[in-house]
Image (cartoon, rainbow, N blue to C red):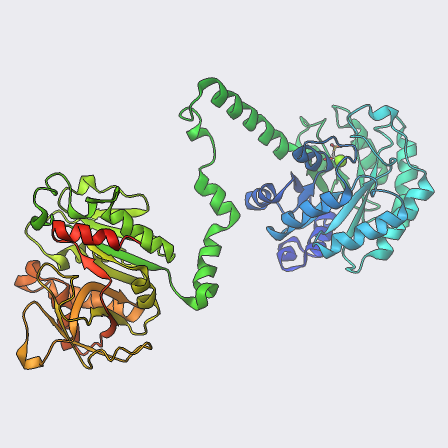
Length: 551
Ligand code: SPV
Ligand code: MG
């Protein structure tokens, strides 16, 4: 009896070559399953198999070519790399005849090891070979010595001592008898094959069982029961077979399913009948490992910069534009054919801000802008901006922009805001009598007035107020209704919302009150000064002006 290499439950800790060797050498019966590309390889591993058969038939078939070495060996190896990359179990390649002579075999083994393939099975036929089930009896066998040289050349080329070379006997397929199979098996074993694969096209297992009996465990024994599939598996166990290869069943499953789905969709011209019968797109993403990439992006992309979420407060009607907002909220008023909100979303997208949430209220059902998610403040008639912001609170992102939905501004303002340091940054227009504000302005009182420097000043916001606060001196400008929150700032805002919600006047509070509360709590709000080039749309005149800020 051959040596037991290692107990099977330690196999997972071994490298792939050693794992395959364990599968071959341990006396218990094991199974490996065919795969033909990355996704099928993953499916085999997830199903619990301990190894993968990279079937020549299936690999050729998935390329749409015949199992006659029409796919080049490098094309096979290319696909094996995908299969190996996405799996942790060993792959045994069905290497046909080794794709040439001993020299080709040497290079093949080297390349397979480099791609993480655990072993190769070669069959004693002539290159280019034909699938054993197509006119098998007419196929010539390799010269024994030549084939033994190939095995030796492969063994001498491997660098991992556990890389496996399985010698496949085609004698029974080609119509020879058991003694010829035995003669060859002895020779291949002596040449150094890790295991012997005895192949048969009979629909009964008699041939392989007779061989197994005669072989009597001289080396590990492998079978492929494609044709004698109705044999009970225990029969193989009793015959002391080591490894069963389920050789082509995933490609056949895929073909049957693809044919049925393609025919149905063609005939019915709808997807409705098949959606429940196929894997959801989400399942494809899962098999591709999409979640891992999302996690990795958080760690590595943009120097760890988080995705920024924009929250657009758009619940109010915009009374000043009463006639125009009879059937839609202000954010849906068209400007040069596009709703205001569309212009806003386009500006965000230009700066890769793709997570856009609109808090809607008045005529919320009319808000329909691709790329923006709509959530509703059902109490918009009796509540204010902070109540709307609180509606979005459970879906706050890591970093955020909070702004009014009726804002229009040149893109550079947003770009500068994203660059501006500070956990919370407020945008303040320092131009006196700026045309931008037609409604009631939010006066901003800041620690230092705008010195018009090109490079950012370090300025703190002290207060925002609808009325002039003479005790605070001269206002430094107008807050335009835009805040940027980094992670810590976002947490401060969340805490502030929780606190303020306890107050009876919460429903009447707006973003300026939130800012003032944060400042009172000692949370610094930094200021980005701008000079014009923005607008909050409150009147028909504003709509004209807004047109100029479209870009
Ligand atoms: C293969 O899977 O390509 C094989 C096994 O060689 S069989 O098709 O059964 O010959
Ligand atoms: Mg094959």
